[in-house]
Length: 436
Image (cartoon, rainbow, N blue to C red; front, side, top):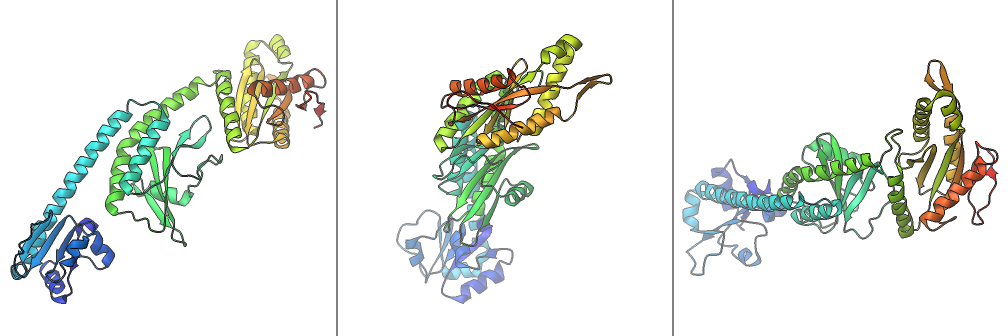
């Protein structure tokens, strides 16, 4: 590590040979980059000019002098006559390394105290966006890098979403974990250090830092690397310590989000409930407005569930609803949201889905529902169909109320005529059931 490497500034090979002979346990810099990153350096009497330009990251400098200078000693300098140093260089180097270790330890303690105070403040926060910004900016500050993005798992969407980003080009794509290479993420997870990086052929790169609590991957920080970006080993170690501590804060927020998610579920079918529908549809409309995308909703109402209740009883009717929900969930994508809208009516919200794609989903759901009878008991089999109505934003409506009304009207046109088919909303609010 750079903190254990000693750099040598000298034009004379004699000094380097003497140090390596008398200090075999010490690692000396073998390149200019290592020397410039060293925490302890030895500056020969013929290289004092380097002191004016600085020695990059050194904490302790052993300055060799042919005779002691009259100028004031700078902070971090140990000035010694060259001849005296060469008689016992190991003692001077050992003291310098001890001083550097002490200074670094004090810096780490100060940094960790700052982080603990920050974490204490974050424990009282409940808004994930505010906490995410604080964590991301702290990580970027430790690494000395300008931009990054924090993704958090959203149990409502069942994918990772941007919780904070100061990258100009970062936006929602609907991907499960956008812009994060699976192999790099796996390397970070298996490293035990919450950290992995890679460079690409053109010199740019990427840092991935997973936020894990027990076996749950609750978030990922992604930081792009420019060609001239440099990450020190001290920086990566500090980030590892920080993320190991702050993960608990994010876990608390994650658990709160999951609790909110449970409150948004229908107790009987485990589909989302009307409360979720109202808030999520607002979010989906805003997202589509912002990014110029579209989405669709499918309303479906079970045909003749009342007959099931009358003939077999409401318990069988409830179990039928549970089986219907399972088949709908099995026929849609992970990002699609299945909502029990009320009674025997369901709604499916389809992000980034146009009218034709929504029709394909409706057909798939219809096929799943009619593929076989619902066996609720050894001697009870129920066959049930549904009437479907589709509306697409912004094709059929630009407000939530109108979109719901259009899908609902399309569904009721089917229900009042053929049943077991799909209707599509039109701007004129009239359509015929689509042939399946």
